[in-house]
Length: 98
Image (cartoon, rainbow, N blue to C red; front, side, top):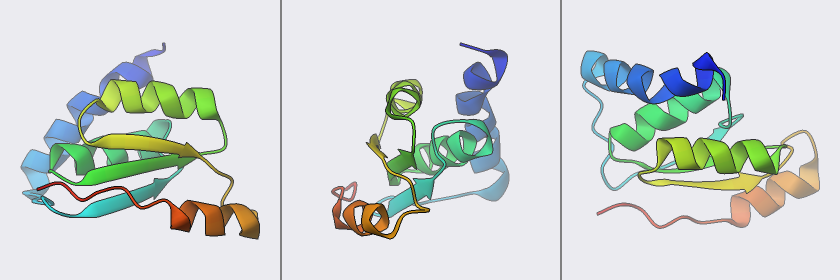
């Protein structure tokens, strides 16, 4: 695990405090949500109360991101550059948070 991986949850908390995000009851799909800025965005949305679906081509990276974010985060391995995979991704419907 690199230092960027460890910073995503802390950065997410800062983003949520700064932007006053309130996303309870919402669902967010974050393509590229397994690392870098995508992971930070997914963590910020989860921290703000959204139920997050993090998507990435790398299943192992998705699992690690979801485990790091912990709350309100599921994952799916998908390449949004391929039409059939986008349709499969759109068919996944995570339950909104209450």
